[in-house]
Image 1 (tube, rainbow, N blue to C red):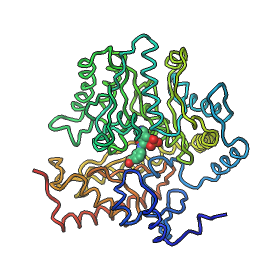
Image 2: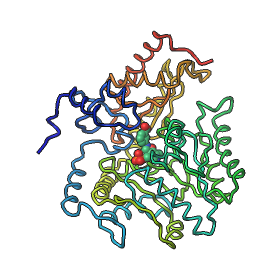
Image 3: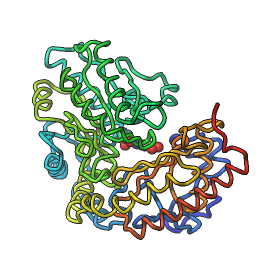
Length: 465
Ligand code: PXG
């Protein structure tokens, strides 16, 4: 049996990686020259690389390892399920115990009457399901022209053709012939970048009203749904002003627009409640889930829909589904993950212990000379880097230059903290203890200090004209 633990030397692994492995969201040519960092194991909130370095993972993988690494219970459940029933599908009048149990558990945890789950292997697939689901819903109600989905610039909803069309990432839309027709984007509620002279509250209402303007312009009878992340994740942990979501809810209600909350990042405790919708106070008709559903231990996602939507689409054959919809091993792993989240009161831990402990320390980052605003909700947080706090100035250098430089300082200090443009973001495992948080903050300060020194030395602490 080949073992992964006794691996080749790092340089050989990197050479093989460069020769044969195309990485997501990477310029593979330059990555190959530099050599990707090889992660070999993980435990708790720490990764270990092929050189034996211990790295503090303040991104929980890709926003997903909510319960932390190394939980044997999930490995045991996966092995047991693989022996008992490694695979069967849920098409053609069949089902199986893990999918049944997981759907019922999600229905119990989800708010309101979100009682029905259509499974996928991840968030992108689930959002593709949502596109077809909402259009089928309105067609079944005799309104086939009500098929436009409104989303937001700088949203992230996945990387497949459909979900990337819903997303609002300019770089993604520039490649591969997307967006698909009948997707419309409005502006994001990012006060730091776009608020101008408005107060955050005025700005929140103004950005929400863009939804109403779009509906009136496109026609109420043409708009099927509005999709949004309760807190934008990949866009840079953008937390909307308090005035934003109540206005969005009012508009969706008034014009009979389905509200899709993309909970792929916010779900399963990230914001201090089971779902981000609860934190921002909205009542979605559909929630997209993935990531924290299994804490990333197995690929699984889904669309959780209301009683009414389930009833309407059940009137027809919904010609849609994936080989791995409700995969038994992934479903069993997700169930075990939910058991741990619940029995160990990890959502309470976020709300009552970890997030309050982190909040004060995080907000104090705004006093650092390189930092403008510092925002946090639950265990997801961001800082905007700036050469001048008072004017909320952008850097004169190409957007992302300073963020990238800062990210490299974090990497060198064995801290995984991401940059999105010139914002730095974290979304650590939810199980972080106060001691873990102290260690993380120490590495963040060290990295920021070093980044500031480098930025100053290179003459980059300059505001854009
Ligand atoms: N919706 C949201 C809100 C997401 O954050 C997806 C859907 C797609 O899920 P899948 O499982 O298909 O990847 C995501 C995924 C980043 C990054 O760089 C974020 C995601 C994925 C990859 C990278 O922050 N989020």
